[in-house]
Image (tube, rainbow, N blue to C red; front, side, top):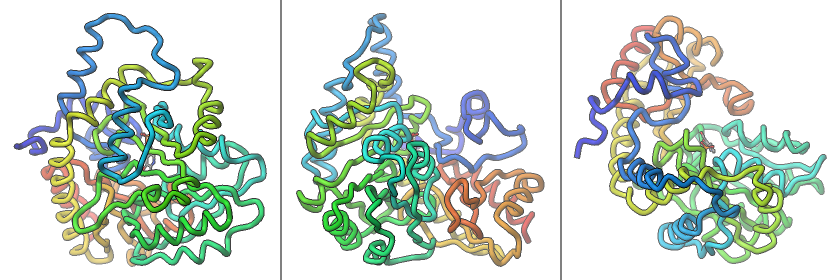
Length: 389
Ligand SMILES: Cc1ncc(COP(=O)(O)O)c(C=O)c1O
């Protein structure tokens, strides 16, 4: 199969449709290796399912708690692929993983509460915690950490702590947490009666021999403290369809999340077409995902090898995610300066390791997304090389 050959990238459509710091928002001569969004078309089964639904020509209100078919598909995915005994009636489709994170924060946190987040990590956690009036407390996991000692997180726990945000695999460093790390983290949550928000949106993008473990699979006690959030943007290129899911593991969590979601009043809720697309992704697109991960693994290996051949840049191969977190400290420039040089001179856009994107621990790094074609990646690397050497 040649799903991810270089000639499969449709620049004309990307220029019109790929926003969020990507093709449609940047000058024509800039290659965006920014937001983690594939440059390839999604699987045909997704659009076929949506078209098929459209042909019925009814776009009536859907069920406020989401299509039963989607809830069942998600639950059976967790049972069969994540070893998590998920119940379909505790699965709530929401209008993006980002909203799932926010909604979990809104459900669990009150004004003045504290929530622990990793540093560096995607900005969505801090943003969501602060939007509900709580405080984000960073737990440092430097980019080259191989083994995290989660016992150290105990030093950050106060009587205001209510939530620990786990991002696994970890965007932007690509760390995939081991079973023993997760057991320690889960035991701490149980010991201090804290909820774990487990964001698993990257869990399909994991490179052999690393193995993804869902924290809710570890024990009933840990599962009971966990709210799992995931989505389809990273695995299936469905970011614009704005859909994610929250998987509660007990009735109290589910009811409280549903209540805070406002789905019952129709103020929020997932577009029915997105739900239809997500069912197709889960039920028919494993072959596509497998090829896609094979492709991103090749791109990872290419990018990491080439980056490490550039003087003053270095990078460890991420075990998960399709982003590389590149150390730029030896350039004696800040992340923002390197970002600007690459944008203006190399015409390659990356994400600078700024506090507002990833937390304080990201300084000295830039993030490069590699879910693109070999031709685009090679061209980007050659521009970066020319510019920085
Ligand atoms: C860790 C993490 N969570 C959530 C999201 C957002 O996903 P969605 O597009 O489903 O809102 C992203 C996107 O980059 C992410 O990296």
